[in-house]
Length: 376
Ligand SMILES: Cc1ncc(COP(=O)(O)O)c(C=O)c1O
Image 1: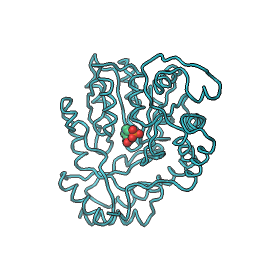
Image 2: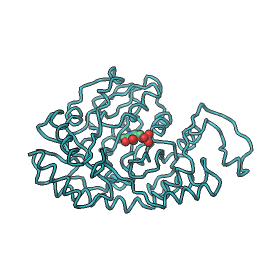
Image 3: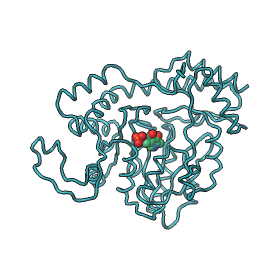
Image 4: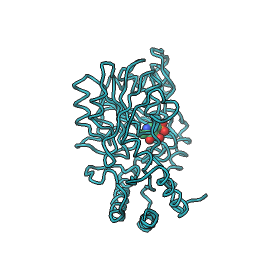
């Protein structure tokens, strides 16, 4: 079925295609100068010392946990209200995910009080996820982490250029991870970035990203290096110059894209204000946000009622989604199950509405009017 209004639409035009053609014409398509340019510009935009491009965010998260020294059997505190990759990365290093609830329906990001309660002598790291591009309470989280000597990894997939107290999300903890999957604010198809202010972690991430090798093909082709050693068990987690070429065009567009998304969010908030029976998370949020997704939560609702609302929206041609099914309820995470009442209600009763910069006023009105009629 073709939706009248999709959940997401790419902010692409002929420029992305031309940039790819240009990279091919230049005869270097694997990791090379375009990756370097993409990294440098991304680091500059985030005001962070180092940005290392990767093939996706899942591998960035894997590298991040290795970089901060998480070892088999260590505990890592994380949300369950996230994409499964946030937690899978903890399992890749044979660590134990300790799920923490989110603060509230209005503020569905990891609750610092829950983190405090769940710290044990085995806690090595906290992975936070800035849901929708809205920040976790990073002051409280960094204070807890510093007091206990625990590392912080930020899954900032939803929040490129989002801010918290003057800093960009992803640059506050030890390592930040970003995704450039097609439906993200910056889309390259597949793609990711790891950012850090630590030169030591940056150097090690470059090694681990490329088989633990001390030099890369591009450096050898350019005569900067003639041989290499392998000094660690690394991976092939590199981005290539074709994806970086698209990423560079997307960086040209990101500020304007986010400005339009902010207008979309404002219009939604105005239109939805008169609808009873829903909460719009982060309505009081005042910092700059990437507005990656726009979610609503049905109050006094049930899983079945939420699904009926989604079905009726689909009948009106409006695509919706649920960000996310709870990770702690997946079969594979049974052994790490714990009660998370706020997360449990949210995942059964939230709806993600369409959000992208090209969304028009009349479309937001159409979505809001349909929602009002359905919920009544
Ligand atoms: C919160 C979150 N974490 C991790 C990922 C994984 O990113 P990628 O698809 O680039 O591996 C995603 C993207 O889908 C995400 O939304």
